[in-house]
Amino acid sequence: MVAQPGTAKIEPDPRVSTVPAAGFVASIDAASGQIVEQIPATAPETVPGLMAGAREAQKSWAGKSVRQRCTYLRKIRDAIYVHRQEVTAAISLETGKPHVEAVFAELLLALDSADFLARQAPERLRSEAVPHHNIGVKAKSGSLHFQPFGVLAIISPWNYPFSIPMAQILPALVAGNAVLLKPSELTPRVGDVIGKIIAAAGVPSGLVQVLQGGGALGAAIIEANPDKVFFTGSVSTGKRIAEACARRLIPTSLELGGKDAMLVLADADLEIASSAAVWGGFMNCGQTCISVERIYVEEPIAQPFIERCVEKAGKLRLGPPSDRDAEIGPMIRATQLEKVEEQLRDAVTQGAQIAAGGKRRSDLGPTFFEPTVVTNVDQSMQLMREETFGPVIAIRPVKSADEALALANDSEFALSASIWTGDAAKARTIAQQIRAGSVMINDVASYYGITEAPHGGSRSSGWGRSHSRFGLLEMVQVKYVDVDLLPRTPKSWWFGYNENVAAAADRFVDFLFAPRWTRRMAALASTRGALGTVFRRHRI
Ligand code: NAD
Image (cartoon, rainbow, N blue to C red):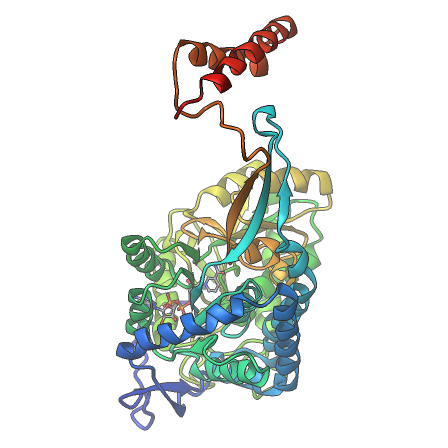
């Protein structure tokens, strides 16, 4: 029996207003759809003034040493800990995710990022000498310096409203930048809590400012010319931001959507792999950039694997975050749920089967949707090509690991992936061939919580990296400083070109790169003579 996903639009409850008052952003309980608080919005026309304040604050902040900035990171870490209940409550309220997920994927990550950076930043941002390998520049002493950009704009999505901005604010600060943060308009309360934590940590005023509002405010922030923009969100908004930044030559880091593949080989542990598929596909109600969305499973184990996924999906408990036993919360908004239903309808029309779930659970709230397992899928379906961003896993049997790999790579997205097998060597070989920013072997998505692991993708998944030392290096500009050790000596490449200089230049190339040593030695002898002429003839 093939279930049919709903077609009716979810009508707003007339008793519940979801429209924010003018000049406010509404904090909405995702489970009930009700406004719980009106949070003052930042007027776009005030952004230039806020930017000026951030620039002023950044000047003295950049003058502090990295170690001094690290003490503030520790204070932020401690303030997060003190406010941890408020943090997780705001996250669960506005996103609908269970408390356990608010702790593991948000709170812990922010705490650990602060800790990691406070330990690592002094070494990672230390100036370093640059030894020159070329004899022609041996009389120079070079060094690299890691300097802040200035004021960074961080524009964040709603789905990890605490860990995503915190994992960017912390490295931004330790590298000497100021930050204008625009949280998602769907999670303004979490944004306010971030502002509170920053203030409680005693971070200098103006250095991190939380600007509340929607896309128009985000656009106004870019108009105010930040020195770099860190955007995390959908592909369509990412393109708009990339265009706006390109017009002003503002550098960007873009963390966009995903369509992560899970490759389950015939020797995988069925129990473990099916539990991982269900968790990886349904955590945060499937609204994670690195959610498992496509599963390619080798034919010999496809049927039992599907059966286990169906059985496990059916056992998951749906409910609001106030129900501590609930594993699946609501989707964020009706519009997102309707997009998921649209993809399911399209797939079913083309022959896909909904093996589990597929229906709304309006009895629990306006945006609850059953965890859904889809089979009989084809690579050309929207469900297999576009980001679903909902509680749906699509499973397709494949003949071989090679076919799984080819299908995994047949996507405009390249964020992360996972491989399930008992053969570690084979898994490592496949991992090298998957087009993705990260690949997990026998686990899924959890690398996101490892502060040393870089996160980011390519193609439509964006560019740049967060977390890890690479995320820290996104926050700095590298400056090279060169000290000439023979300041009274004219340089052989300066003006005064003539026949001798041209010959010396050719000889010098021979000396460095001629394949035969004899030729190099001969070139050295005549280069020295020629260079002498060069120095003597110096006149300009
Ligand atoms: P979204 O693109 O709708 O919004 C993201 C942010 O952009 C919000 O703060 C929004 O107000 C702002 N914005 C909208 N229009 C803007 C404009 N013109 N100028 C400046 N800012 C603007 O995304 P969302 O629904 O909040 O998040 C879901 C998406 O984010 C999914 O596609 C998901 O895959 C992606 N995501 C990616 C990662 C990653 O690390 N790659 C992480 C989390 C979420």
